[in-house]
Image 1: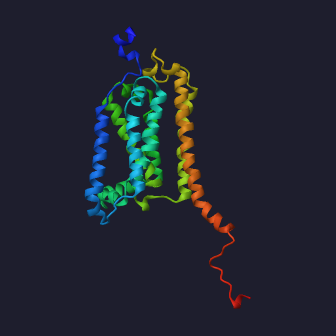
Image 2: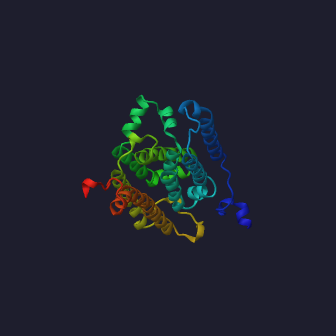
Image 3: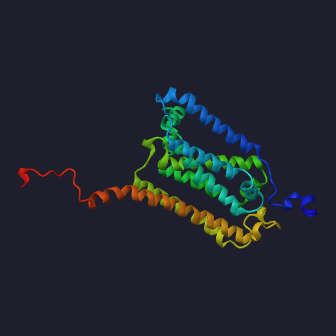
Length: 283
């Protein structure tokens, strides 16, 4: 007890306030409400500029953004456990971006982007090959030991990397669930695209799982949360990156598959043929 009082770093569960996160989430909520209620009817020319799905997706995105960026997950990820760092990155790249896109109605996307150079740039970068390559290059770079060690001790760099990660993740998800339908790829293309996105993380995940010793010196500290050793922490991070990400992406693939093929299968197996009418000529 006296040791913790003398050095609060010995207590990984000490509360740390993050007003910058509260301001960010508060600003995004206020901006969304203002845009929907004030600008929405003027720009979209409809009484209900957003759907219930948009609102539910926005609330879920804000909750996950707050959980992933605030105490205790952020502090555990930044100071103690690389596995929590990996979980935080999964929240910010796999969960928040698609929800943010689903929360954005088409009229808002087009009002922000327009139809000029910004739209053409996003249209090119959001194609499956550039979007997938950019996102995975960023993922690889953000796992370089030197950069991880430095960003964990430098808050501006840490938040800058998060902004880059979220931005490239938005590009990666636009072909799947972006607001503009012309930027989507077909359902079979979506399944192949997500499958490839689930394969690429195998490389850094395997590296973390089978590495000898501490890969990231910043997390090689005497204080071990939940009794996890440095190597176990790294292995858990690899499991989160590969297994957790793969399960999530494969769930979307399975859902897309059944949406693509279940309806036609049910129609083929149905005894009802609405287009077949019995007439005297057919007898």
